[in-house]
Length: 199
Length: 199
Image (cartoon, rainbow over all chains, first blue to last red):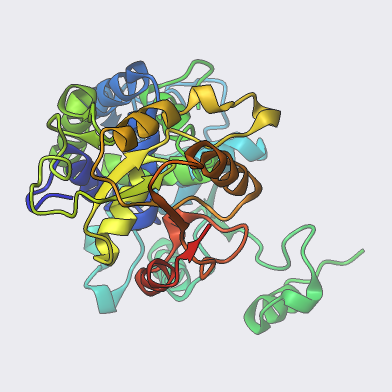
């Protein structure tokens, strides 16, 4: 409101950097925080200040966790013959919530995207190879987004693992459960035709 | 991912309390903060921790500001014969950005809403009356949301000011009925200032 930025403006500027948050949403959030009990902003401040100290990358799978190895890599009751390869740590969270997979994970840290200058060496593919060569792995499941980058990365890993005694699979892509055929895009539809299952 | 909440989960829980932010958005924000340089989360933490100390309510208009009186109330170059009445401090921000109004403000702190148990005494209407009786005010502009609560509050103030030598106007309904002042664009807001109608 005045010429220079005040504490509210500075908070709005910082909040606007968050993904999916524009200036209007950031302003709304800032005034919500101002209206709320100070204990809320203090707790949020504490969490943010301690976040990077509390959370580190797991040296085994590359996920974010409070301990190294992370709780999943440290769990002896999982199936050590299965590795699910994901792009980002947050993908693990979604897969864990589905309770469908009981093996271990490997975070690539991105996808091969030549146009954005991301090559195989920017990812943890070498580390994945080392884990496989360590032995005991029967199947690698690629749980990458069904996009051009995801497909490129899958193809690269496929070529790399040729000759190794390990099965390589990737998540089926097709119509989302509860979705409507009418709203399916052409590519999704053609993939669900190719991947059709016998009843 | 483990049984108890880790630092990421705790941040997600806190971020989910923000208006318009669900669990998915909060998770996205938390991982963005984790991926970003620690200086970002530290700056955000500092802003949040100091927010309630830095910002107070202006004792004159009721707005949030770093100083009391706020920069607007302390500005001698504004038109002292005009008071614009708003529901919340953030409404002042939107009106200031329209550059249509050069008087002073008065924040009601809410709207009369009997179903939610908000009566006239919960608002700063008495303080508004005192400002008017202090003299020098020619016009009160009601810039309240065009909703049932906004209309009820306008009507109440209209009855209260009857007999006082002050003109009472309200913003023209260039604003979409049922909408929110916070999301009005600059032009719509300008027009509703120019087309304000006498009550």
